[in-house]
Length: 233
Image (cartoon, rainbow, N blue to C red; front, side, top):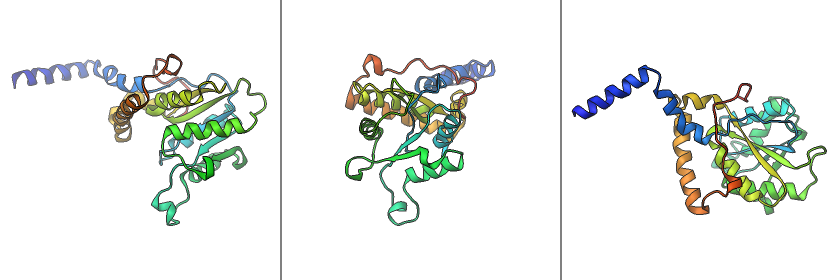
């Protein structure tokens, strides 16, 4: 009991002195690829699915308006009962509609399916469907060497980039990632969505590492720092 009280007092003092937030930021910083895109020569922006609030679409639309790429690609994920009963359209179409509302021309947004109109059930399938789509078509003019920019929640960026780089290995198409709302890295423990996202992401990393093995040197995430000024919010 006494040791617990002492530990609580120590943590309280550390927090009061400002030392706790840097420690708390570490789990989020390890997950986030927080660097803003370095140039505007990406063949496409890829919006990762699996999020319904629209944060990823918002960030992707902002990057598009900045001229980072000339098109946005979205893989249609598996359907839900809402879609099957005609209450809502597929998530990719909802993302497209939001992107159009945010200023992206509809003809610059491409919705992708797998073979025989298959839908993605995981980030790995999103990567495979994207690779097949890109290999089947010509690149946008002025985008050599070929590269794409993934836009996803900040806590998903490192795993998404690793997955795509593994699937795209040997294709000649490079993959970068950009974070939606990276400012939450500095305060992730204060927001329920971010808090749950961080813990879920470590569980998913564990599952993927057990299933697919450790990342190869060119697949490992680069050290992540704090969000850079001007990053998409």
